[in-house]
Length: 546
Image (cartoon, rainbow, N blue to C red; front, top):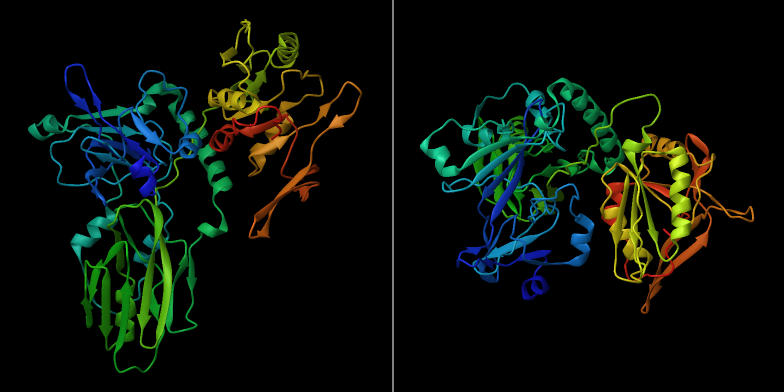
C-alpha cells in the first residue's frame, strides 16, 4: 500500500514462496514490435526496465506474479478475458495499468506493449504473432514521409547509428536457429493464426481488416491528426499529432526556421523525458548536444539549417508510458513549446464473424441479465428469446437465496452471494461476455415479433456510438424509452453539481427516428469492450438504470 499511496502506479506485485522454498516473483517485459504484411509481433521476455525512485529494492516491469495489490478502478477498467481459462497470470490483459517490481516486493507498471531492452542475454523469451493488421504503416506518425520531402540542394551524410533506430520497425515471428544463444534465451514462437484452418485464414484476415477499419473510424478523431503551426514567429513546429512509443525514437516533423537576413541562424531544443539527435549531418551546420536533452543547431545558411531540422530525432529515455514530453524550441528573441505524446498503441479487440446476408445475431450478440427471486419471469424471458433467436447465448447472474439451476442450451448461469444487487450482477454477467455486442435485458422482459436486435446492431455497425437503447412496452401499453441528459456544472467551494434532465441533443444522422442522449432504458445493445471498461458501481443495489 505504501508504494501505491506514494506513487502514480496502479499495481504492485509481491513474491510467492513455494513449498520447496523457491521464490517466484515474475519480471516480464512485454512489447509489440511492428511487423510486415502479416501483422505485428508480441514479445514477452524476462527482465525489467529500471529502479523505482524512492524504493531502491523495486524495479519497473510489465508482468507480475498472481499476488498483487492494485487500484480497484484500474483493474475493473482493464478486466481479464474470460476465454483464458488455464493460464491466468497478470500479464494476460493488464498492459494499460502501471506496476513495479521489488526484490521481495514486485512492483510493475503495466500499460501496454513495451520496448525491447538490450544487454540482458540471460532471458526467457517468447514471441507471439498477433496478426491484426493487413498493412504495415508507422503507428500514429506521418513523419516518415519527410524522407521523401526534404529540401533539395544541401549535402548531407546519414548518421547510421540514429537511422537504425528509426528504421528498426519490422519484426518476424520466427524461431531462431538452434544455437547456444537461442538456448540461453529459451526462445519460442507461438503463431496465433494456427487457431484457424489454413483454408479459412485468408477470409479471416479480410474480416479482421474490416473490423480494424471500423475500430479506426470509431476511435480516431481530429485530435490525433498531425498539425503544424506555420510561422507567425520565425518558428514552425508541430502543435499536435506527434507520438512516440516508450523508449523508442521518431523523427520530429514540421520543424523549420522562417527567418531572413540574419548573420547566423541558431535553433535550440530542450526536452525533459528524452534526448535529441540527427539522422543525417548537413554540411555547414554545427550540431551540439547530440544524444542529450538539449540540442543546439547553428549555421550561416538558413536553407542548410532547415534541411538539418528535418533530420532531428527524439528518443524517449525515461520510462513513463502514458505521458507527454514538452519540447521547448528557441531562436533569437522567440520561443515556442510543443508536446510529444508518449504512449503505446491501442491494440483493438477484433471479432471474426463470417459474412452472410444480414447480421448473424448468435455470433455477434450475447444476451445478459440479472435475476433475483423470480424464476418464473426468467423462464418466460428465455422462452420468448428462443422463439426468435434460438441459438443466441444467454448469460444470467443470480443472487437469489435459494438458487435454481436453469437448464438449456446456450445458457450460462452464475450464482452470487444472496442480495448482492443489480450492479454487482451486471458486472458479473458482462464480464463473461465474449461476443462483439451484449444485449442487456431485465429478467421480466418478453421478446415479441417487434423485438429486432438487428436494427440495434445496424446502428452500432454504421456509427461510432457505443450503446443504443430500445423501448420497453409495459402491460398497460405505455412505452418507456428514457431520454436523459446528464451534465456536470461547475459549482462553488462545496463542489460541482450533477444534473439529470429529460431530453436529448439531436437526431442521429442516417437514422431519423433515433436521437443522441445520455441515459437509456434497461434494454440496450452495447459494444462489449466499452461496457466492460466502464462497469457498474456494485454499491448501487436497488436502482440500476444505465
